[in-house]
Amino acid sequence: MLETSLSLIVITLSVIGLAVCAGAWLLAGRSGPSNHTADPRSAVLAGIGSGILTGAAVSLGVIWLQDEITREGQNAQWRLEVGNSWRIAGFDAHGKPYRSPTPINFSGKELPNADFHGLDLHGMRFDDAKLQGADFDGADLSGASFIHTDLSTATFIGANLQGAHLQYANLGFAAVEKAQTLGKAVSNAETCWPTGFNATKHWSQLVAAKMPVRGQVVKSKGHMVPCPLPEPVYAYEGAAPSPVPSATPLPAPASSPSSSPPPSAAASTPSPSGSAAPPA
Image: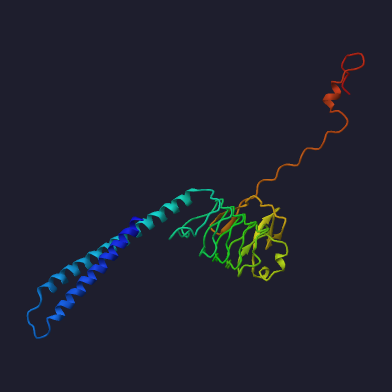
């Protein structure tokens, strides 16, 4: 409100300054070319008008600079709050000026029903995040990382998923079949897709990544629903996962004891007379 009032005052002063300068120009013109003595009022008016215009210009510059500083401060505060928050329901990246989410790492955050539609999110990190119901329609997600991310009901209508990393991602009920492209997007055997996704044009564009399964290396693009999100079996840095050594298998359970008592039990079995039976 204050900035608006100051802007109106500056604009008013600018108009007054222009009017004064115009008056000075008219007075100077009335003197005529034959009159070598200029009207002193024109010089005074010209000085006043130019002073008003100079002050208005300086004031406009100060208001603009103050506005930019305020916006940058709000942007920095927003980034700090988002970076320190682990859960933001209904996250919206469009509500404030200059609050681009580009420098934010969204890995491990819970952002149900988040709104990212139409944003440039290429190369961003969403690993281990929970993004059920998130709106990525029309967004640029090329090279973005969604490793082990819950995208079960997210929408990707018209989204660019070129080269995205989708290993272990849950896309079981996501609107991903209407994405613009999934060219060279990486998935593995634990990536969960909607029913019938393997019959869409995108299936042939995927790149299958290798992963260990029960002691064997499996190369697959994923499977269809149902798809419970598995526990992570990769320790990764960025979008380049490296296998974690498999845990040592547990020993087989001991066989059930036979019906005959062990020798020690047989040796301690009391005889009918109450005395212990002699060892065999």
